[in-house]
Image 1 (cartoon, one colour):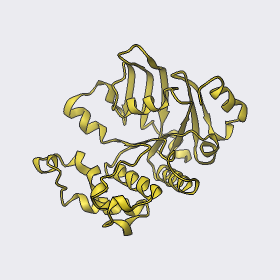
Image 2 (image 1 turned 90 degrees about the vertical axis):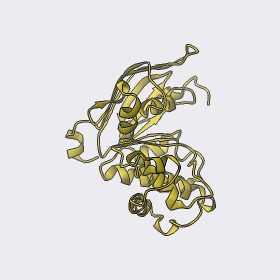
Image 3 (image 1 turned 90 degrees about the horizontal axis):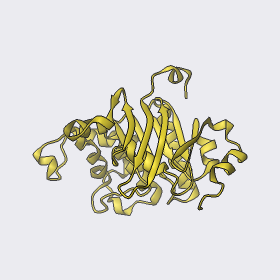
Image 4 (image 1 turned 180 degrees about the horizontal axis):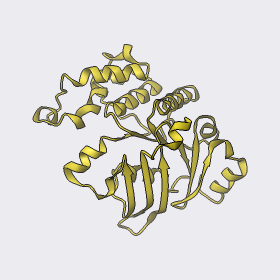
Amino acid sequence: MTAMAALEAPLLDVHDLGMRFPNGHQALRGVSLALRGGEFVVILGSNGSGKSTLLRCIARLLDPTAGSIEVAGEDLSRLSGTSLRRARCRVAFVSQQAILVRRRSVLANVATGTLGRHESLATSLGFLPAEALPCAYEQLRVVGLRDRAMQRAGTLSGGQSQRVAIARALAQQPRVLLADEPVASLDPEAALDVLALLRSLAGGGLGVLCVLHQPDLAVQFADRVIGIRHGSLAFDLPASALSPSIVAALYAGEAA
């Protein structure tokens, strides 16, 4: 993170976020965090700690039951309908699985990321607007796969598929990129490649918030590391300050 980025207002400002599911389970309790452009921040926590729920609430894939989620100064937690759909373009989400349409080309998969900006009857029927293609080519260049544009997505390796998913997310032209365990299904070399890509995207001014299970990778790539335990914020530290004792306390008594 640059010194200038440290002085900027947060792109993402989450305040006192709570999430109680209909069955009564309290998944999040008063979580607050900020993310600035140029930052790569990793969230650590055991299974069931609430870290993935946190990301899904920020993306408004789940509706939080308390708190606020401001993206570039606008509170997503108060929006609905068309206003929410438009605002969500500022927050892109990458999941553990790439979830590509295997029979379609890599280019077509990436171009679907632009559809939030090109709402029409044609796009609602699955047609891609011609103006989406230059953007898709550019995002494939960013992730190093422009030469695979016309290849069927189903022929890609796991690491390539995840990079295509990131390119599709970038095609939204987001301010914030959320990545939920993006390397959990990848081999070690591909995992390092994907995390290096996310690190470079943050270096370009995007705010990147990423859930990982590997503290060593968090230390290697992140600017800051956030710990979530029992749905609450356990710590928010520079990656260089993450010690084995802090990690051990985070996971103590938790299910693997």
